[in-house]
Amino acid sequence: MPYGHRRRHDGQPDEACPRRIQRFLEPCLLLLLHCDEVHGYELVEGLGPFGFEQNPVDLSTVYRMLRGLEERGFVTSRWDTDSGGPARRLYRISEEGDRYLAWWVDDLRETDRVLHFFLETYHKHMKVHR
Image 1 (cartoon, rainbow, N blue to C red):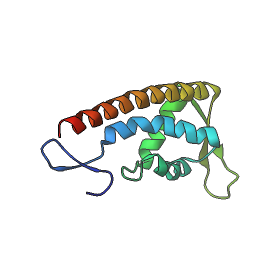
Image 2 (image 1 turned 180 degrees about the vertical axis):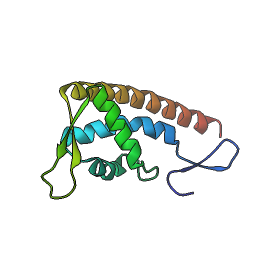
Image 3 (image 1 turned 90 degrees about the vertical axis):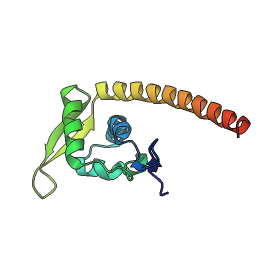
Image 4 (image 1 turned 180 degrees about the horizontal axis):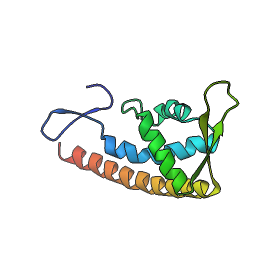
């Protein structure tokens, strides 16, 4: 079975959970924006290594999330008219967004700890019961 494909409880093939990865989109965008001021299309290209190759994100989803982050004060944007084509928006993380990203990192660390415990417990259990 190819990487990124799973089997549902009924044995049928299923894609990796898109809802879970959609929520993960937010900290990934913030991290990419922490690195540089970029256009939305560049953000989409930068998402692949975070697991979005198996579940590509639609550009409209990224822009919708960027608007929401901007409304909440985590991202700022400006029109880029210097690139020689049509004006495009450039996005950057704000100071508040930097704090929100730090919150995400703490939350992801705790999730990582809990998942590792679960997986280790499962692995030990399966060794005994096989």
